[in-house]
Length: 196
Figure 1 (tube, rainbow, N blue to C red):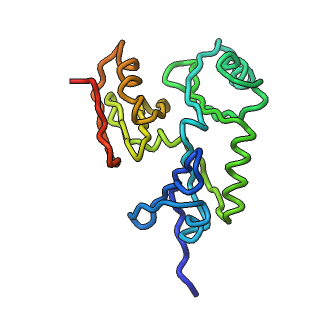
Figure 2: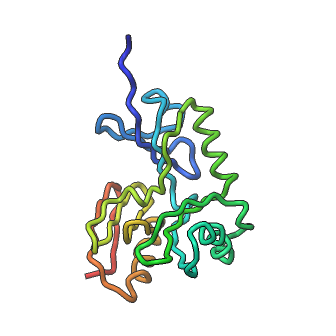
């Protein structure tokens, strides 16, 4: 009987099928989804901030069922399409009547799952990639790989940026606060921060 393949953590690249990254027995690999399937049939998928949006919303006090039904419509102004075109995941927020929300276009999500299925990968869980960045509250976590920067600001919040825009984005995010930031740089390129 052959050795069972372990579940792998796969960082899905939103625009290039040859740039996905995954980790097998502590070793980082990169390539296509088909390449990843040679290491495992089952993956935990990490999706980019280009695909998944993280936000929070506060809703008037009422019963939970009504709040959850109203939630997509409370975000309607920030959506490019009608709320019916999105898949929403919700967690209770830090404050009463606040909800942490992740959302992705249903068509995009179906396309990603279909690509994984075509590569013979079984997706066992899906998370926004920014939530994989370690944080030690109240410090933020900043993870750099290739030309991408993930900035995690709290348990359920964070953003994805290009390396070239990260410093500007971080400056604007820090206008009203001055958090400590733990930096994890796994890129060959230097990250320039305009911070002390």
